[in-house]
Image (cartoon, rainbow, N blue to C red; front, side, top):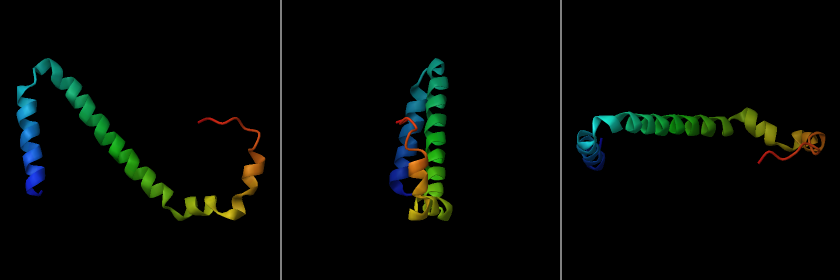
Length: 75
């Protein structure tokens, strides 16, 4: 840990110490959400860089654009 990270951790500990016990569950839920989101982003990053994904994006798979052209947009 560098000095900045240590200061941030100390600041978080002070904040946590001052939060009423009734609010700690919400804080834990939020921290868990941030951790899960980070893990999901890491996983997606790994997957999008994989050779299988890159192969799927390649021109030899453009035929699927025609196959699925009638599918409704989900985004």
